[in-house]
Image 1: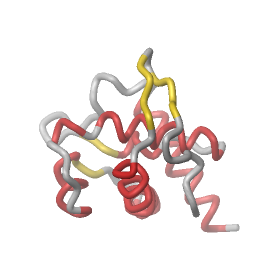
Image 2: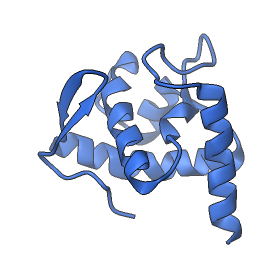
Image 3: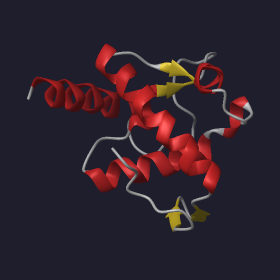
Length: 119
């Protein structure tokens, strides 16, 4: 289940260039399985709970960059974005920078992972 991103690779996301760092590789390697579990349960998870569960060195509002990289990783796999499952505790919704319709993306994520498990 290795990443489809490479250390040092430059990714263009929302008009910015992101370079995949060592910390990104470590974070994405543990974040992806956590969010797949959330997808299989049909739920969402708060930004702060992601940070606590994985003991990540990010501020609560500092996950956007790594979630953009996660979305790119999912895109390269032909999957809907697992980032749609990470929501604000106060609003219950993704951050304003999320591209697309988060509700329909979550529906696609749930269906995708149900289908993967049932095959």
